[in-house]
Amino acid sequence: MTWKTYLNKITAELIEYLENDIQYLRTPASKIRQIGRREIELLIESYKKWKPEKLILKGNTKISHSDQAKLTDFLKKRRQGIPLAYITGQQEFYGLSFRVNKNTLIPRPETEILVEYVHNLVLKRFHNSNRRFMLIDVGTGSGCILVTLAKLFTGLKLNYRAIGADQSEKALKVASFNAKKILRETSKIGFVKSSFLDFLNKRRNNQDIPCLITANLPYLSRKEYKNLSGEVSNEPREALLGGRTGCEKILVLLSQLLKLKLKAEIFLEISPTIYLRLKKYCALNKKISNFRFIQDLNKRIRLLHLSI
Ligand SMILES: C[S@@+](CC[C@H](N)C(=O)[O-])C[C@H]1O[C@@H](n2cnc3c(N)ncnc32)[C@H](O)[C@@H]1O
Image (cartoon, rainbow, N blue to C red; front, side):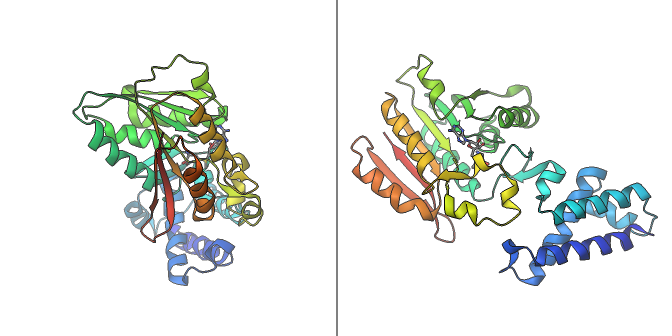
């Protein structure tokens, strides 16, 4: 059997599975076919290190039994709802390749909005100014937000230190691996196991240094979590479930922050579902001096930027 014949068979079976997956119910068939083909390409790229061009060249050569077994196993795992990123162990985010595993959330494209927003703000406010600042990422997971920002800042005249915090030690290991792989020796990032900002309470902080805090904390409500499609529910519960209404974790972080005497701004990824609750909280809280919500291109509210 040739590579081409075997891949066609596996791709057709994968597409059939995707067509029945609840998350693709509203996706046009042509797009699902594209997704299926791309998944197979990414899989081959990750385990054979073959780019799609090489795959075409290999098309008419014989496929070994072990490669057939690998592809069959892949299909089996996908049919069990295991996401592609957990099978290949990597996910692209902002053009960078991040290691992921079952202990980390798979970075999502919508989180790139937060990265882009903070990147622009830092450039405007701190570039070439020699003003120091702290960058803290709460619930860092794979480290995708902080590592991407640090990568974007590489070579720029910026005076900052960065800390990634997560309550999950296993996630922190992955984040630290990604920082070393993507930033190499130049990494300015420290990682710390901490629930929310607990680690700041234990340190003596210089209160004059402005702190920029990013956080993509879990924000699904219990009901949303219960209704998740099979695939997403394979990701860590602690990375998805925000509490009864979805806002609970975010509110703990905000109340902790308001008690710390810091000059801080916070950038939170949020969903439209929790927007109104957060808006009310910000409007009623006198310690919050400024807040604004930012929409994505589809006019969905995705980000809350607030200053204290
Ligand atoms: C939605 S994931 C985001 C991961 C990553 N920042 C991203 O954008 O892909 C939320 C992360 O918050 C962490 N987390 C949940 N509760 C936390 C808490 N109380 N303190 C610190 N981290 C927490 C989870 O372990 C998980 O890694």
